[in-house]
Amino acid sequence: MAEYHYDESGNMAVYFLLTFLLVILVPLTLSSPASFRRKQGKDGCPCQQCVDHRANLQQGFLNPKARRRTIILLVGWTFSAFLAYRVASAKIENKVYNPFEILGISSGTTVKDIKSHYKKLSKKFHPDKVKLGMNDTIEAVQAKFVEITKAYKSLTDETIRENLERYGHPDGRQEVSMAYGVIFGAMLPALVGRWWFGNREKTKDGVNARSAAAFFKSLTEESGIDEVVGTLGKSFEWERSQLKSKAAELDELESRIKAKLGSKWATLKQFAEVGKEQYETRRRAFILLYAHLLRLSISSSSLRAEQSNILLQTPTLLNSLLNISISRNWLVPTLAVMRLHAYLAQALIPGESSLRYAQLPGISESEAEVLSRETNALQDLVQTLEEKGDGRVGEIKKAVSKWGKLEIVDASFKVIGERIVTPLSIVYLVVKLRISPPTAEVSAKPVGAPKNGNDEEFLISRKDAEDMPEGAHDGGWAHAPHWPANRKPGWWIVLADPKSLRVIVPPMKVTDVPIADPSSSRDYRSYKLQFQAPQNVQSFPWRLHLVSDTFVEEEATQDITLTISQPEQEQEAEDEISDPEEDSLAGQMAMMRGGTVKKRQDGDDESDDESSTDDDRKENEDSSDSDSD
Image 1 (cartoon, helix red, strand yellow):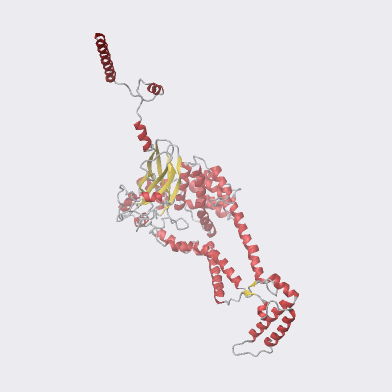
Image 2: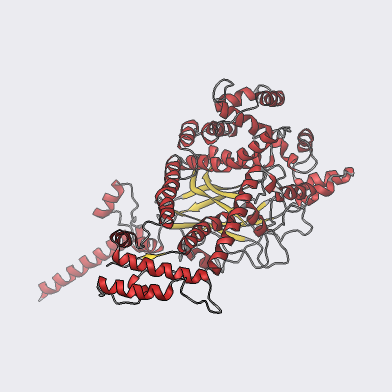
């Protein structure tokens, strides 16, 4: 007879449920925004506007989405703790069910002997005949008698014996087996199917396939930032679910947008193909997006929550749009997509560079336009406000003290183990960066020739960025009080050809750039981009762009030239081969091909004539001597 493992107390089910919950709860907890904020700390922009903004985000569990997630985590961990307590306090009773062992007989015992032995045990363990001891209970005696009876029947009753052979227990199919069947047979296939069919509609960038198709069709080589915004607006038709719109409030919000933008609003709607009677989901999201860019207040809490969800979704959509532009090597739309990140972060109308001072606390958009005509740099703005005795200058100084003004310490092309760049070699663009706040209390060191001792080691390593210098820090959260989340500043490194407007190397996104520190021996960080050199021996005048994803109009550019040279061994071999002489056959053929030849000098002709005359004279003297003889 086959032996079966039977979990009579259900402990295996508890183990399974606990493991299943932990597999879900641990990643969900680690990826929660609250744990991420605790990990990152509270360091960031010190202005009061950002401090209040971070304090509001700390209370983010009050919003519906975060509250629902928090409740799920609390219930899940509470149930897991209960299951863990059950496991810790449970008595392990799982064993192989063997009726012969329970009856205390060998497996070869006949049915007659089994019945005889059972009669003896029933007289001994019957609850009516057992005298209870000090530590015995009537329940334990009854359980023992039931166990003996089941073992006896499993060996003598055909039905019970069939249950034992098929299900591993004389009582037949157990409920715990059904629980396993429900979990493995229904829940897991449903979850896997939902994940699989949901991912089939997504691209590798995490956007809907129809959104990616709209990006591919709408983006052109000359697309500016307004066209990029319109292309972004089209994607909301498939990225957002259909919601019951508050038509009156949306219409009122659109009228306020139209009053500020004028005829430009109609042009933007045309780019996004937004109509009032069609694409309602797209129109709804587009209105909320521009309400954010214009910093318009929204009274409805549900619309504010929807606007926040739309904004938090835009980085993923823009990254997909950026990848499409990069795949075609288009520079203009690539830079436009990158710059749109900053306009969204600071809630400013895209392309309006005159509003860049409106990023600072306390400065309105109308005042920013006036200040942009009076000053050209942030330090000049701060100095002007100080001279006027403006009360906002204190908060502005706080914001600017950790401003993301990027400085290029050094940028160069390098090849491992070589002094020059040869055709088709693997080239590394090494860029050394640091943040130099324009109004920092201590000025950064002047840019000099950095030491290249660690460059070779960095090139050999597989890292795209060097480790942060010891004691350096990156400034924490950026100044972005209008963005619905804490924001860490980042920059794209773009190598492009300014003449053909083509991207040479796929851009690289960098973060954690150290702030300049004069007291440190090394206050910058190195980053590298790898690509293959062209095969032509010539110079390529390119341009390096560093574009911020958080601060408007904070870009750094530098012209950089890649010079492709022939390998040194080939140059030496060519120098050793001299040009053919002019009057030789090789020289004549070289002249016909337009090559260089070695010309004969007049002195060489005279020496040849003189040598021939001397030879003739000597021959005449020899012939006269022979005649006299």
